[in-house]
Amino acid sequence: MLRCRLYPCEDKWLKAFNEQQALRNLKKKVSEVDKPSTNYLSILNDSFSSCGTDPTPSAYSFIIKYLSHRRFFSHLHVLLDHLEKVERFEVPERIFVSLIQHYGKLGLLQDAIDVFYRIPKFRCTPSVFSLNRLLSVLCEKEEGLILVRDVLMNTLEMRIRLEPSTFRILIGALCRNGKVSSAVELLNLMQLDERTPNSRMYSQVLKSLCEHGKINEVMDFLEVMQNAGFVPDISDFNSVIDVLVREGRGDHAYSILTKMKLAGKRPDITSYNSVLNGFVLANDFLKVEELFDEILLMGLVPNVSTYDTYIASLCTRGYFDRACRMVGCMEKAGCKPEATTFNVLVSGYAKAGKIEKARAVMNEMLQKGFSWNAQTYESIIDGLIRKCEIVEAYELLMEMLGKNFAPQASTFKLVACNLCRKDRLSEALRVLNEMLDRSIFPDATLWEALLVGYRSNQLRTPVDFNIILGS
Image 1: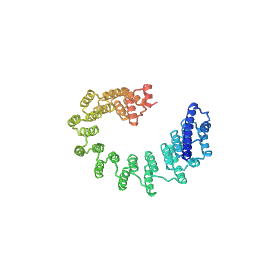
Image 2: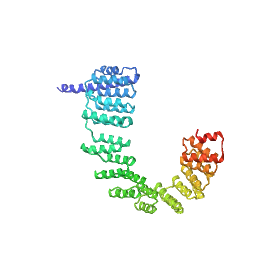
Image 3: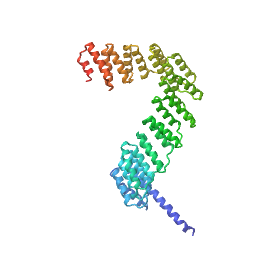
Image 4: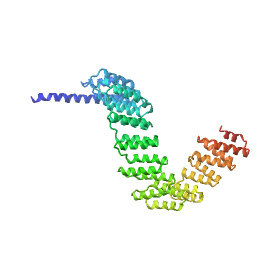
């Protein structure tokens, strides 16, 4: 009697053993052939029939992945047709999800869509799982975005209920592509459809508005987000601060620091650095001093960016002794000055016409192991132009180019125009050649300076004339 009761278990164990053996045989045979001309459907059937069993979903999953990764699409289509029309088991949805993802990686977006629509024919009920994978694939590429609308319309006919995860994918795609107004509409649609947006969705939209939207849209949405019961995180607040600083609204940026504290968020040094920069740009140096003191009172540790911004404000006011002492304070506080710090001093001295002081700082940079970079050269060149030391500015520009630094178009123009005014047309033409070699084209002001210089010098050589005409 006991032996009879064990028979069903033995049959089940034997069936599982045979299926595992058949799958091993299948993998072995496939690895031995690996040719486009191979009949993979025949190998699949033979591997299982030789073990006295039928192909399993796992076997089909393996062979589908194998064929898709090797791009044996003709064999893949044959296999899918056989799976649809001959087999009778319910095909797991994960097989199609994997296939959709692979088609997406290859850029075969229409094939991915076709597989999704075909899922019900395999005795499988498509769910939001496969829908989300398809949407993720489509939203990764610009050409896929235009296909999303039709997929969503057909999804309604397939009776797949959209979930918050679906909206998150769509909102993320809209934000990445700068279509923020559509993302806001989708948030509103979620609420109408009794779906509750989460904080991540609001954060995505807020940051996208900070990048692509107008300042009033940013501030309005910040209020909407807070009214919905979501507290922006520090990075969200910092994005808003950056927008306000860009718009020249330093006072409003500072008010965000207050809002952060009221919301239970402690502003970090990045928050303060942005507001500090806003006050410097506005030349509101009283508030610069007050904010720098507040940073210390808050127990925050100033970083290089904090010191650089503060030192720049001191240089703008002509407080160079204080600026230099602040560099010493940095070192004592354990914040080692960087090349950017010395460049701030170089720029400050150069703008004030203190070229020798600027050169002294440049030498100090070298002594401390820092190399001059493009910003260093451009700062001193600007200072030399201000002092009407045009030839020296030209020589530094050539030195800069020799070190493979890329000057800004404005630097080229500044040097070339001033060379023309000093009747140094041959040097100006060399600067022009350097510009054209880098696909930087002169504006009307530079062309006019070159032509005026050409006439005043009565320079008529064909080569130079062709250069001036830009041929």
